[in-house]
Amino acid sequence: MEKKTFSPEASPKAIGPYNHATRIGDLLFTAGQIPLDPMTNQIVVDDIAAQTTRVLENLRILLESEGLDLAHVVKTTIFMIDLSEFGKLNEIYADFFTHDYPSRSTVQVAALPMGARVEIEAIAHY
Image (cartoon, rainbow, N blue to C red):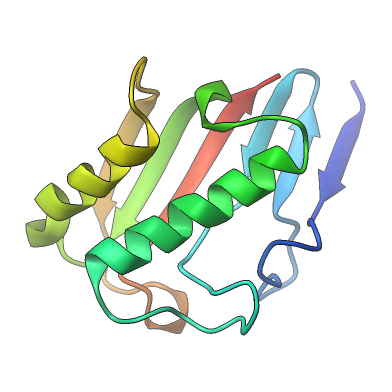
């Protein structure tokens, strides 16, 4: 099976030696998306709602570069630095995934790159 990796121009630049996504067969695996503004490559304001929105918008940009949308996502993994913000994250998440929600795991971590409050990775099906 052929492996295809890519990092779309419209996405924020990777902050390390990795690609934004890898396609194997009819599955797309994304790297964790943090709340980087694609224009400045800087973290958006230190607010869980704004950061979750930016992360999901970045994920949407990435999927659209492959002709997909959020409805193609079958699994997400969410990393948060503070689970007390879980409720607010869920409100924003529900604005992006409005039905037939993907499977999901959420874990609290000690820290995320560049001071992010949230990071989300996804698996999508073509």
